[in-house]
Image 1 (cartoon, rainbow, N blue to C red):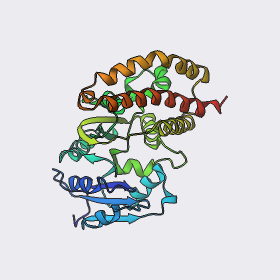
Image 2: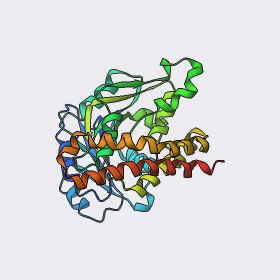
Image 3: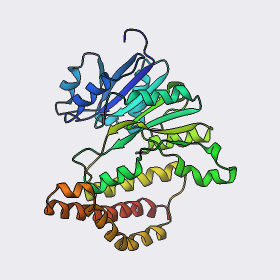
Image 4: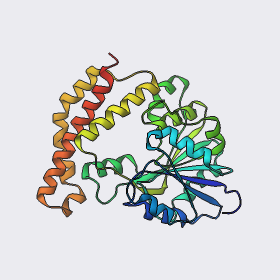
Amino acid sequence: MANRPEVSIIVLTKNAEGNIRWTLSLILSQKFSKPYEVIVIDSGSTDGTLGIIESFKSVRLIKRNPETFSHGGTRNFGGGKARASKYLVFFNGDAVPRDKNWLAPLIGQLESDRETAGVFSRHIAKTNCNIYMALDIATGMPPVKSIASLRFLAPEERSAGIRRLMWFSTVSCAIRKSFWEKNRFREDINMAEDQEWSRRMLLKGKSIVYEPESVIYHSHNYGILEFYRYNRNSDRSFNKILGSGKKVSFLLFRLAAQIFYSANESIRIIKSPQAKRISGLRLAKEVLVGVLSRYAAILGEIAANIQLH
């Protein structure tokens, strides 16, 4: 990697000692013929993360004050430190590539289609993931490639269709450095900086690609309060991005109707393959958390949107 690399892999970390050794080992052993560098931007780790990172001599570690962190701002900072000539790859420190073939499909897509602005990986839940969340990830991240582009829509359909098409994730993604230099991530939104960037690229006529051949392990075991906060903050960001929010009356209807969906949610969890491998007590807890998390999510959306009315 002495010559200027074509690819810079920028890993964001904070207190990731549980998996960062595994993550970096796989990133550094990719089956990829072109030169690449690995940069870790750490935002104030207080566990053993820094010592683990420093044991990888080829990894460039940059430490930052945790107060400077933002999803868009820290990625922009990392992009500014990258030596890559062509591509930037962003990766979360709490994720892990599934194998040594994670990187090649991402870069391959960018090289095969000049109209692709960004490409992102398929997520698979970690083994300790709550069942309801693992099922959601499996449904939302299928093994089928998709290409989002407004070019496929009639002009009158684009305004309504863009929210559906702006799906993108910087947990594991690759983008053209030249596009990023002219279109950096927004730093004034709490989250969804990836989907806001995707929206801008789509409006410029570019494509966003979901590449299921690139696979990572990534999931969270959010508690009920965490799920509420996540959906509240997510909707606040989307409202800022789109300039409008959801109707509170519709959200209240969804909240009331959730009682009917709770039975389906319970059955879905009980019949899942994961349910066969745990105790009855653990399964009962999984069902309770899964059902209550749906209510928490809608309440979070209501909290974000009620301020607009």
